[in-house]
Length: 199
Image 1: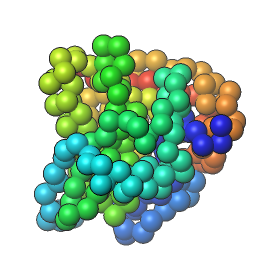
Image 2 (image 1 turned 90 degrees about the vertical axis):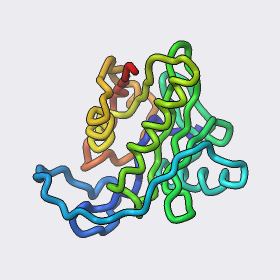
Image 3 (image 1 turned 120 degrees about the vertical axis):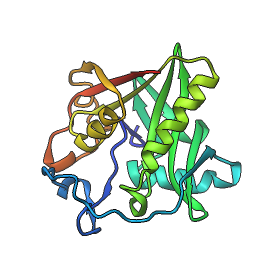
């Protein structure tokens, strides 16, 4: 039981201004304009993870979630056995997205980005690749869940066209042994928010 968590909740974030790595609870939300400095970044390549990359992928999920199992949409998913896409930058794994087919939807089970490559488009490239997978499989929508405190995740998914379709009240609070504590910016994680995107 102690090896499960509710949703994508990175324990390490990277400050967009100074580049310092910040613990989840120490992070703060603030309003800024779009004036950030544009930096030339290496290209992001997305593809299916290879067997040889599995240890790196699991280490990335472990770093982000503190475990390699997640509880989402009422199920516990072992990321070691999940179909996984990777984002490659400069020859290494910069991000990973675990997914599964769930009825008529492609379920984004977990999404993790190496803190070194946050704010470089890795997450967006992985979501685009997941959408391409869904189209190849004839799936018309993608779903994802997160906890109420995950403001960076909610911003990220909504910015990429996902809409909140359900709030499962107290779903996280009902499982204190699974709850990521503390929450982002000390917001108590109590509810599970489910999002969906039609493609």
